[in-house]
Structures are given as structure tokens and as C-alpha cells.
Length: 255
Image 1: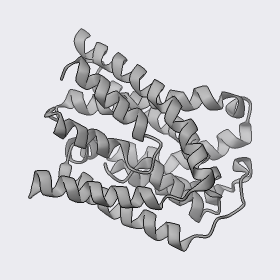
Image 2: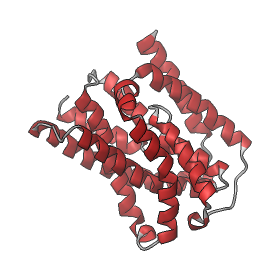
Image 3: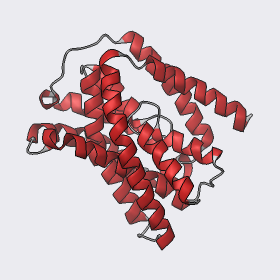
Image 4: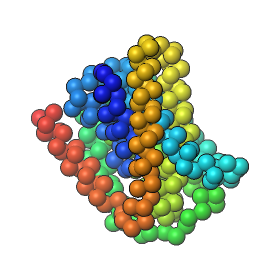
């Protein structure tokens, strides 16, 4: 890995973290194209730079978040299932799931089909108040998010779909997906850094810093664009994109 690779991966992360196309999956595919081996540091890098993208949410939504106890309560309730799954299966996720091209491509393909199916199945709701979510609704969204520990599933796709099934409008489901990413990614990054015993070289820390800044800046622009996109469009195109991408990479690298 070098500094150019760190910049490229940070842009990929910032551009895909909040779209329903799997940032982790795209990082795995980008690493494959760039011929970056999936070492423990690269896996940690791919987790750590997600924090930069998440801080973009904090930057954009701080007024909505500050002193909003009801909203925070719903966010933290929805976070519980992922916290349990992440802690229980951390070693399996990092050692066997992250970096696994076959699992990533299969999840991208199946997730694409689900996005298309859900887009056709669910009618647009008018429930927009995230503060009025019930415990049951919050847990449903959280359970959906917990599936995204599998690379290629997409945390954004899982929470958006979970939000729509819970009765939220597309825009509200999207915003809750943004906000739920805050505790989720902070916890994932913190857990990985602790498990790694902060055992990074000075050069590796510089890669992490560059990746953090790059993903933060990129995510700022993507979040604003995606909100406007969802107001007038559905997620069908993302489902098609996932299917085409997975098939293309499957025949390119796994045939």
C-alpha cells in the first residue's frame, strides 16, 4: 500500500458509505483492482476510514442531534443488535468475511435483487418523524443493520430497507440510516483499534489519517447529493448496479 492507494480507497469509502451499494464491498473490490493484499492492517484501514465518513454525518446533522433525547434513544436501541453481533462474531467477521471476494460478490448480487424487489413491493409511506419511532420499529431497523456485518450486504441498504419495512418514508429511512451509522462505526472502529492494540507503525498511522480526511470530505458531498436524489427517485438503479458489478467482477476475477 502507498499514499495514492490510501487516497483512492478513502474516496471510494466516502462515495459509497451512505449509498445502498456496500462501501466494504467496494473497498474489497478496489483493493483487488489495485492489487493490495488483504493484510490485517488493510482490513483495519478499511474499518477505520469509515469513521471519517461518519463524522461527515455529525458535521451535517449536529443541530438535529444535540439535546434530542428521543432521537438518540431510538438510535441507540437500533444499535443494540449490531453491537451484539459485532462483539460476538468479531474474529469470524474480520478473519473470514472481510476481504473474501466470493462472499462480497454474492452479497452484492443478492442485495441487488432484494433492493429491486423491495422497490416494487413497498409503497411510499408518509411517516417522517424519527423521534416517534417505537422500540419495535427501532429494533427492526437494528436487526436489519446487523446483517451488514457481511461485506457486500451494505449497511446503508440494510437500514434503509429495514426503515421502509418499519413504516418510514424513503427520505426518513435514509436519514435514520445516516444517524444510526454514528454509534455503529464509532464502535466498530474503536473495537478494531483496541483489538489491534494500537499496534500501527508511524507510516500506517499516516495512511489512516489520510484515509480519514479523504473519506470525510468525499462523504460530505455524497450525503447532500443522495438526499436530493432520493426525494425524486427510488433505489432501483442501485439494485441494477449491484447486480451488474457483481457479475462483472465474478467473471473477471473468479471465473
